[in-house]
Picture 1 (cartoon, rainbow, N blue to C red):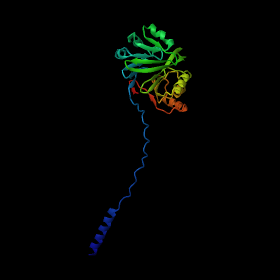
Picture 2 (cartoon, helix red, strand yellow):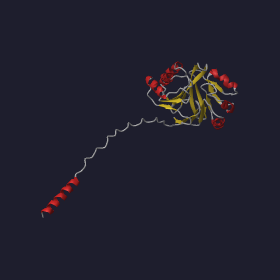
Picture 3 (cartoon, rainbow, N blue to C red):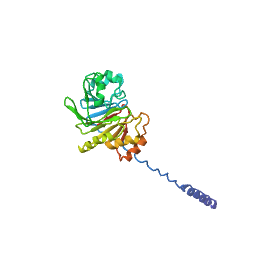
Length: 269
């Protein structure tokens, strides 16, 4: 009897021992990563800009097609030029108006260029060449669709050629700025002051990176224009440094989206 009680007591103690829980180790605290900044969202209303080689832009607005600085291959020319209504050249260098484009484009194509460069385009056989002087505003039309182009001109000391910048105004209010290869912001100041006096805002600015243009000068140009979106073209050329440009833009109090355009990218507006 005593042995049974003793055996039962041992089993009871073993049962209690089996029920004792092992202390749980709390899981490590994981600090959540901050959310990624939202990518800039472009809202399409009536138009799209497609980024091509070098500084080439293909602009489609309602029924109109514009080519800006067409550095195109023969195959691209055959596909694009038949539907092109206007060509805008920031300068007449081969990097902005390729030999293939000059040889393929129809000679009655409407081309806009700076006064100093217009003779080169006419010498290539083009008959409808319009030169814009600084501050001059021109309407481009196709049937019932239209847009306005205003010019700002500069001298590029690297090539000693005249460069023209464009502001494009649309009836959807999405104004675009095309810089061309501007090498110093001073030439844009008067243009900018007139722009602000008229209460106009640049929705998106397209700025050309150049081999010899320092990041602080490019930042000054962007800071001067203050577009809602700054889009960099020709970033594949040597010397482009996005981090340095962003630091310089902070010095210019520019805190809006910076986009590095990629060939084939479509940007709606």
